[in-house]
Length: 169
Image (cartoon, rainbow, N blue to C red):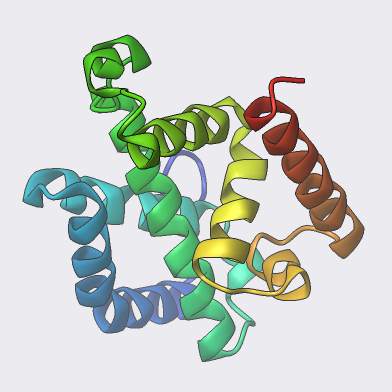
């Protein structure tokens, strides 16, 4: 099963196929929830599995729970990349007519959205996993295959960047 220069041995290929069969449906539903489009969701799942095949040596010995968490990160990341590529996130100026003094929640939401987009991809992923999904920084280091200190530093930088952006510093 060669994918972009990476090939799996017969045992790895069977393991990969089993992994694919047992996870593709929930991954598709997860991507569909993010993207709202069947074709894009299929693309996100396919891209996640291509990445997994090319980096299978990193994931093949993980337990089922850690592997499913890693698959969730992969499909979310691919889905967010597709959203960015689609350019569905309109420019902030398109919303200016809706930003009024009597509607501060929308204004604050747009500021947070803009601040979040300003973060580097790794920091965005860490913020999403930590705040939205409730993973600890230690769990995120396992999911992202990063050292704990690197995750912690990226988390601290992201918090500082968001604070400065929101407060206009």
